[in-house]
Image (cartoon, rainbow, N blue to C red):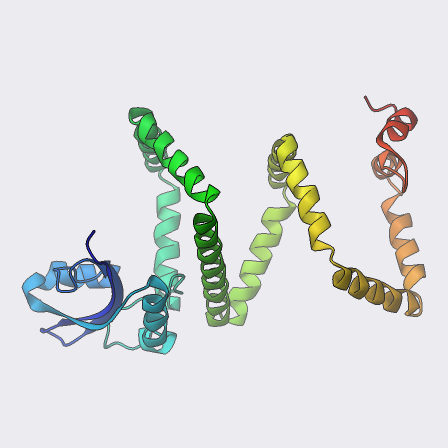
Length: 290
């Protein structure tokens, strides 16, 4: 089995001395790969591959080490300089510069107005799975087999932890790079989408579809039970005691409940809720729900 090298490299354009720093997994550190950045690709097309030189700066044994070094070198300040072709910071979930984000957003808006492109992507995905169902099923079975072994489960947990950490760091870097106006605009846009009837109906269908599976329900119950550790219960109890001790807290909660029960639909939903200590059979007998 060939040895994999996780490299951080620098590609230099000999015409203008602009550089590009990236990360690359390969069996040959001295291969012909120059980089995948869109600005770099445009420069290669303009000047030709012969005008570029690649130098391997670091070689590691793991992907995590490679991505951390790329994140250390390719910062937002580095990307904003005119001396390089990098458009986003390094790491698994790199953040684009403001200028690059604007250009990508404009290109996305244009692409979204092309129904033929969306239809083409759907057809390509269907064709890929319909032409090779055995390959798709073997891929799923290999994943199931790996997840059954202790080593496979541990590797999956590590990968998930690294992925979650990288995604979180990427989102935080992205949010920190926004201006106050951009943050407010994104908050408003998200709020508007979440308030639409279409979005709520779609989310309702998704949740109901998942909860229709008894196995999913059981996993959710077990997850909730295991999450309420004695420490968490004690902390929650202390927080609730502090809230109830605040002046006017009970009055505010009572006013909110009264306001929520003003409409007939709200009163109907409240009446259908299970009461504390009420069994499912007692609840069905009281409400008439089949």
